Image (cartoon, rainbow over all chains, first blue to last red; front, top):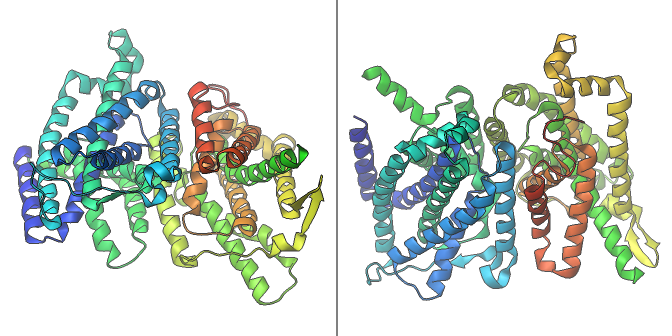
Length: 307
Length: 299
């Protein structure tokens, strides 16, 4: 039942972008943020809240910009390399960050990401300062397409990746390694007594979550065509946590549902008012207070009732 | 030699005073309510906007310019009296005892709401009114010309540290607060109205934030985005000092102020990196901050 629902949603998204091409950019960005939010949601399973994941989002987009400048001009290669860059940064940062818990974990992630943000904004010679760097349109299998065509290819590629990576993350979360995450949340000491190294469990999760945020970041970089330090600002990290919670930390689809909901709300709200963040803030508070399972939880509950 | 050292020290002190105002309310609220208020930076910028608007009004009506000093203080009181109880009762109280994730997210929602409200009320243009600074003029210390307003800022910061310490150690209210901080349930069971303490403590935090914003506007003006910038800076200082430690926040703001000014003198491009690098260095070694401790709660 769930698989049919998910497949129907993906087909609907593809059709929606085909029917209304102006939505394509919004949807690509939503999927990109969904990847990053999924990364945050993986860590939330272990009870770790990171207000710093926008750093990996930005690092990967900067990585793509630098690699493109260095002469690499293939979409697939750029995506893989930039995700590897963010995974590597994630593994390095994670190796000392996962020793901390609760509010200290949140604060340290914030500190690391703000150092990164300030460096990006200030090292004008390297990163272009607050102007950022352009992310040029790369070739796809050796063919350079015009911009609108490339944007369509990027969208359908993101949609495919959403399904494939989503399934992979679902498998990961359902594996013993993934279940160990919720065990860390409920009783870490017992896990250590069982002989499972908590540090390694969390480091793997942190690296995966950084790679996911990186994948989202490079897609966003290609979609926008530019990367700026604001990608890594703490409010961006806050938004990623917000999306993860909006969607509900229940499962993989939650992050993408949350991101789609937020981006569509954004596009709808900007036509009415500038103050769309206010709506987002109110929605967030309402969701946390009255729907602790997130928006995804609504679907879950309905399904449970109908079966 | 003294011509470089003295301005460097004075600059650090003035910068530390402004940073301290942003952080002290955050750390106070955390110590009493155990809630990390992500919207604290917005309250700082709201204080700044209200103060700048009132000062501009005074200037436009050609009233006695010394009134603007009264305006700086009273706009902070005004903001705290209205927003303090309102926010605590409507939102923050639902998060007591909940996990940090919930507290951070609820106050992040509040931050988003307050940032847009400011945009709607005060517009997106920056406000600049420096009459309080010009009124006080300059003085010369060791042959270096210096703004008297910045010396006033340092004096105010010292006053706040001493005042808070006196309030907590030597008044009835302070003892009630200490009791609530030490053991909330026990305090409640011996008849202390904890709700009242929470409202008062939160409003005091709002007052300190708004006062910081009000005092900062004559020196730097105010523009959209100030709330978000102040928030991380306040957070860095509070974390370095140890969340909940008032004197810790004072020492941490001296460290951050000095680091920042030193960076401006040595590597100007890295001044924005200095506070966060200091935060990272301290937190990696002592995650609970310089003056914080893992178990014991002190105020």
